[in-house]
Image (tube, rainbow, N blue to C red):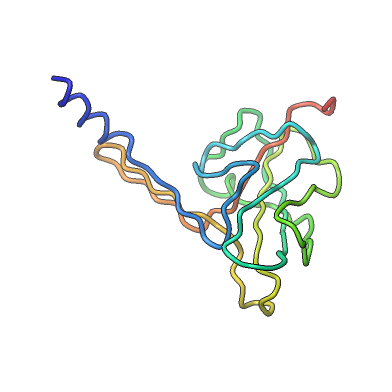
Amino acid sequence: MKQFVLIISCLFIVSCASFDVATPISPESGWPHKVVEVESFQPVLSWNPDFEGPADLILFEGPYTDNGYLFGGEQSKPQKMLYIEENINSTEHKVKFPLEPNRSYFWAVRDSSIEEGESEWSNYEYFAFYGIAYAAFWDQLFKFKTPGNQEN
């Protein structure tokens, strides 16, 4: 009976994420609908690059979310580019200005030593098998959510 339960359980929890160009360290990413809440309105974004040398970082503003979830369609996409920081000689970057509360943000990095238009922005793909259902999300930007009040 224990083996049967284990097999059934595995069928419902098979999922994985794969990262291209860089892997986010903080805040973490990996599940498309759940957005990690950061502790600060000027968080430090950090990554583990698949390349040597400086990076460019892009930050987008996303929709408001008070529960930390973004589900499908336009609601789960970036709405406005805030800025691009070029030639970062580190694997971390502190956001330049305080961000709005209860809002989602999207970010990515790329190799700045490669000519414009030839380096891909970092992204991840997520695949999940839920017994009889399958979900796949491609080219997802890394994302996070700010806290619900300005007291941080």
